[in-house]
Image (tube, rainbow over the protein chains, first blue to last red):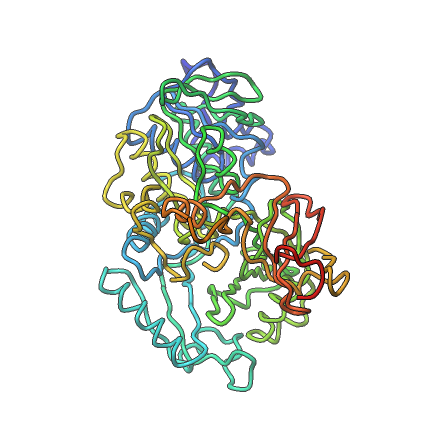
Length: 425
Length: 91
């Protein structure tokens, strides 16, 4: 080995056995504890899934050599570890459809790609319809998906009863189920593993991952980015990419930008773990809720936002009570479970409900944010596309509609059709 | 979750209130507002961490429209006032 540190070995059954024989005492760090250099070609602000994926694809596909990922906390400590891990690409609008399907296709090979088991489980995602109008809506969505070559199956109530035995499909419930739309390729992944896998793979390609390194300012000269001021000193760079879920407005404001983003809380919670009972992901159109069972056996659930701006990351009992009550109307048998944990994630909600990925008025500064509550499923796709943007300086066909400029020229990507009211998306 | 001191009803649970928008999004002057100002206030936000004056409605109570000066990280409330100019009582 000629480098100053030893690269982590490939994870394999052979290595697993070898380390088991020596009591697992000799595993090396998954990524280096890098110290900041004076300058880099590209700095990515935000060491979450999106930032790490961007660094990985930049190094792997675009041959970029000097890359740093700057993270204020620790890897996997932000929104990457706070989401409900659902992956799907069931979008009606073509722009969203192309973005999330690009991501889903990357998910399907991600464990092999990273040599890290991200536990991507294609258990299917089911969007429930609770009345005839909603059924027509999900049928339209399914048709739009199939026309684009994306898998979708319309399920009747009887088919749902068979597919999800634990779901109450009787007509006497608060939200009677009349049918649903299944995306068989959708599913869940282990969110921490996604961050760790990308961090390890990016590090192996020479990316410096700088933890506990908070960006406090963005340097510009004559409309051009020059680097970032951090809690660990000044770091110069010609290109800077912002990929910070939950604080996009704050970081962008360091470069004098005002974005069409408002930040809201989203609650999530898990019950105590139980034996396998729900082997798919259920999303209820009636209250925008979602329920699935983790690999550990916990029932994980969430629903709509708290409906007022907040950065507090706190629980909100009325919302938690509402989500639990609605979940029980679909799954009465879960009433015997005890709630184990609840938490909140902070969501950068854009004015049209779709992310902002593109160039900014500052030359060399790029933004990737405003993922609302849909960021996790986009992780590999977002990184892949943002890396392409950082390398070429120009958005490709998929990214072009998501430019910040769409708000100036009125080309909104408003999937929910609710207008510029960010917490209604 | 907040306890909000409604000037008409007294302290009430936050679930009775609905958030409408940041006061940045409210028009200063309907009559003379230019298109670019409308665009700016409808779409862009400072979204800074700190106190913001926001428009709320006591929908599950007296129905008053209120301006609430609230911190978006600590959830401290500095003041609650009627949104209607010049009205100190009534709805």
